[in-house]
Image: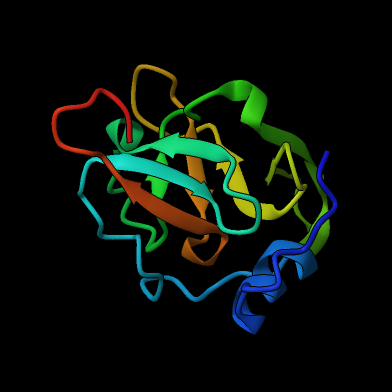
Length: 131
């Protein structure tokens, strides 16, 4: 696991990624994005979520029904705020991404609810199969 903090992160990104903050709903730059590509960790660039699994959950945060590679997204219990949730983190640098809930669409039934501040977006290149 990489423990390096990206020196280019904004203070708001550091708050979300390493102090487990949450951006206000409907405020993030990626919650409405529909372009094809790959969402990567804002801190380390690890591939996290494909645009192919993104959906509008109505929550105000980017939501995905699956990770691009399950090995790239780690989970751990989160009992903050008096409720039991499952936190999602970048498996490479351990940056906080958001939470996963069992109320998403088929085929997984999962909703990975992610802070835009924890992500960067790599558009799909024309004529290639990958972002």
